Length: 325
Image (cartoon, rainbow, N blue to C red; front, top):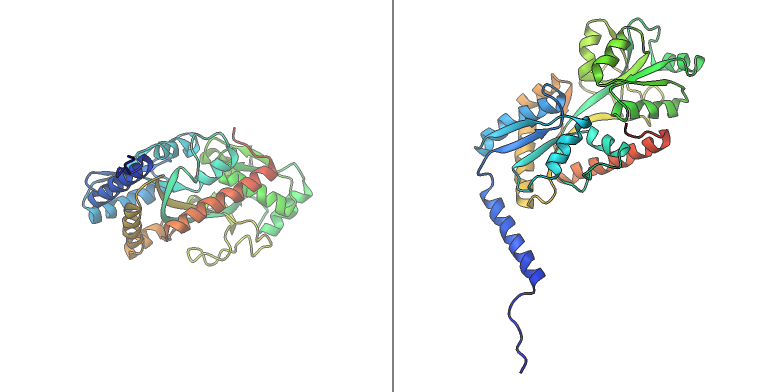
């Protein structure tokens, strides 16, 4: 006589055990220190964001929150470290916008910029600006375009490296304006800034946070910020869109991610805690002093930013034939 088994099929049993362990993990979280990984060096914008949030998060969650800088390979070392970490809510990642640009120009990364991570929320936005030296005769975007078109292939633009967001923005700007500018990639921002001020290169994109000290010192002239509408941080500075190039849009965004597979309950708790922190006046003011705007939002919004940015930069990289070094 055949007997019906009362034992659950192995796949169903495994799924039930996984759900149970995830629930148990979520209920006990956090019970030990949390690490926030930054894929850039100390004193950079993502480092500032991580350290500011870590203080408040530690206070609210009653556990230590440690910032771990894992720089190198244009941020890919830190990103890969997080992508391969345990999805238990104890390893977080302040991801910069270079996560999407790196993936757009490098198809051989050992992680997926979207699928390898659990989105938590957007954290902040920074502005990119178009700058020239104060010794340049150029006073506006219109004058810059006219000057370049009068000397095709004879003027130079600087970037902190091939495939960086600064490189991609300028290539998009070149395509939209019909300009022929020569790319000069540097190993980091310092060399490009030095040569711009010294007149050895003619123009570059740079974050507002990095540009402001040089503008205040009378060494740089800012021509535009790159966003759809004027920033409340720089209300008197016109946008590139206002000056005829609405399709050239790019800012520096920062978001909180975790390894793929973090339990939904932990994601929800982190999202709630971090949104509350970002809404505090003290935090907003602190960010504003660094030319950053605290944002916040949902995991779905963070996921949309990642995918949209990746798709957009891949299209531009393909059109300009940009690949990683």
